[in-house]
Image (cartoon, rainbow over all chains, first blue to last red; front, side):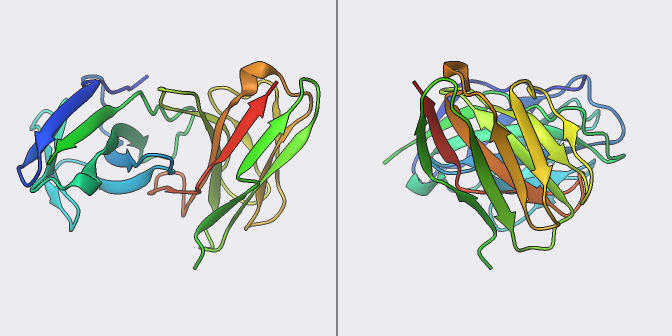
Length: 112
Length: 112
């Protein structure tokens, strides 16, 4: 089963860029890479997703390795409100939903 | 739009009691999900409903039942609560199973 691995925690200074890595070495050709984040005491919220090409939106950028075995979520200027747990998950575009694995994620701390 | 709403927000049960967690979405989504999140852990999928009239087991279905009452509502029932079911429960919805999920605020359940 395709799964992801992320560092348990990372720190960043406020207003500096943050690069959050995710490894997914067993990714299949039909898996989209999705990122969510969870602020304290809230439900997860969608951040960004992609298949093969790098993606940008108002919240973040997603850089996907050429072999798709890893990806990086980029927050261009970290703010205190970005302190959260970030989850990288795989979603099968064919609709298979046997299990969607949200691992422990990466807990991001932002230092003022 | 309220998005995904969950009731109750908090609940304390005694071992053996039963209860139903309610979830509703107003985004006209086809797919709905129930997750649980234990302290310091990621989310684990309990059950999902790919479309109205269908339900399927996720990763950790034991001890739970679900009902997709209509397109808007998806309830989770604990027939005989156990302390191991102490957790935060999140409901989510998406257009289809491959799409971005939108999460509710969660129900914090304690079983004594």
